[in-house]
Length: 104
Figure (spheres, rainbow, N blue to C red):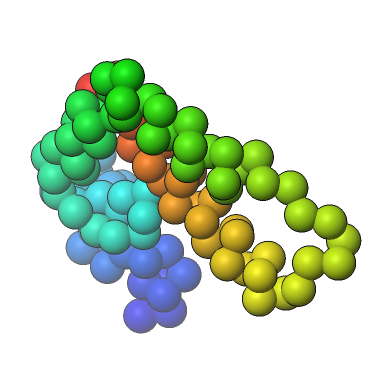
């Protein structure tokens, strides 16, 4: 049980990995366990959603209000945490788009 808490995997999953078996479910970028097919489908959906000119404009807008938003040293802790949460979410979207393009 201690090992399960450390790795997030059950003993059966660890045994399967040691035996070289492919896991039926994987942890996604968002920390949620899904089947590999569900992960690929989600990545494909996001890459398709943002591939056109309108989708790219939306991504540029989201990037401008998250990653490109620079705060000074006087930012309050709660405001910084909120901004970092937005950046994290944008990062998940961007990584899923990249993986969808690669077919992963």
